[in-house]
Length: 335
Image (cartoon, rainbow, N blue to C red; front, side, top):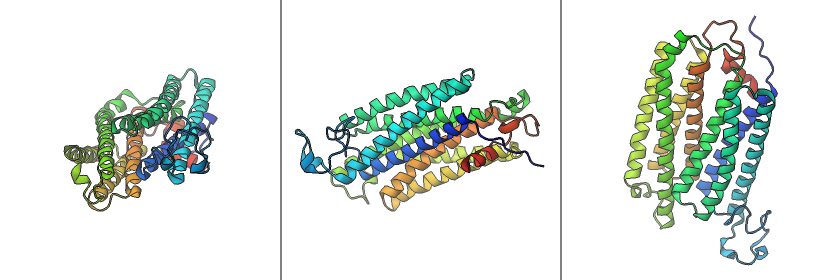
């Protein structure tokens, strides 16, 4: 008989929801950027001086230019802010749950606390983004901090599934060392790639604002785009090398193999969407897909690194819910 999955704990459920909602916020942030709604509310933290957006240009308070009022862009940005507040409360609830149930598990408590502190910093950064009128450098910082927050949540969430599992043996850890370091290198490269991509996006926006045609705007970015493109090839090569390493040395460890496959698929998706934007059409849908695949790729790489460190030895009957992490996550998605 197969092992019966134990029900998820309250912390595991909350951590999964919080992590998923944070990814949704990153996706919505991409929608805001792609639609040009970043200044749909020209002030912070209110929107046109009110906590609830005005119904029409005629209802604007004194001091606001009616030409700034665009209901579609305003509500897109306002809903993005509401989702950000919701994520903040979810992270707070996750921290409270970690304190209640896992205060002695540092690998759960400290990443959750760091994510909570960073989400406050991220809210302040949102105000700076508006004040700086979407300057590319601050938008890049805003995105990188969001990715750090979701990586911290992933760290705590994944470890919650290994809390009662025995650690892998020293021999297993030694065998996984090349994979662990290769994935760390891939995470660093991917984060740098995302940061450069955000800078490219800022230059594209500036060129479009200056009247450049969408079909020619990529060629106006210059060396920055070339670095972004060449780094994508390095990421692809390293991801392929990791895939070969897993196939040769870790094919029997199903969770590692599945996660490695997810990384490879997301790298391919990211590069394919990037090529489509560069040579086909710079549409909002492609921009959102490109950013979303990049953030999901970084998450998949983080999970692969964590599995390489924490996945118990294959065949260990005491592994509990850490042994078949893929089965647990499938169970979580249907609960």
